[in-house]
Length: 148
Image 1 (cartoon, rainbow, N blue to C red):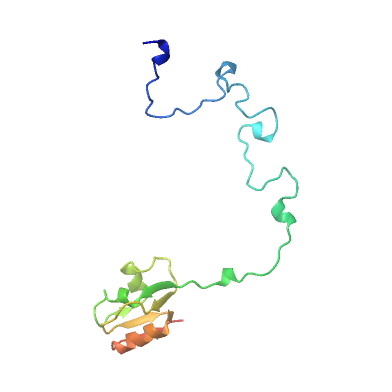
Image 2 (tube, rainbow, N blue to C red):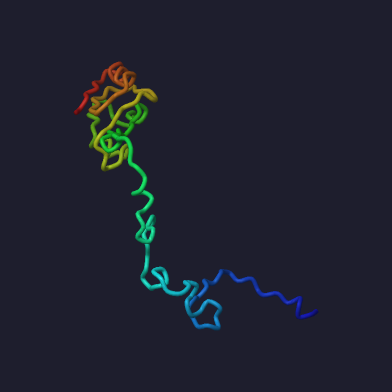
């Protein structure tokens, strides 16, 4: 057995490199930050897109067009199969759907879609319905009321 055959024990974890701990450590003194300048100072951070005071790219490029996306209405979707969990004769509205966890608490609008079957007579109050879903609710003897 030679000294060349001796191997270091496998460490259970990698130790983090400690910088700025003296010149002899290999990463001492400037700690890999170079000399002077904004990024060499402590507490310095530069936001993404900052170009050192030069007019940033996102401000140099022309803005074109118009987007209606801020005004888009996004409905939470509930299927007919999900309404089967309610008892016959129940009024199913936003509050009832939130209570059983079918839609998130902050939801303001809901749309009923026709996936699955509905065999119970329910009074459903929603913001929107697909044509098939409205027909299926009424075919089961229930009513589909549209709320504004």
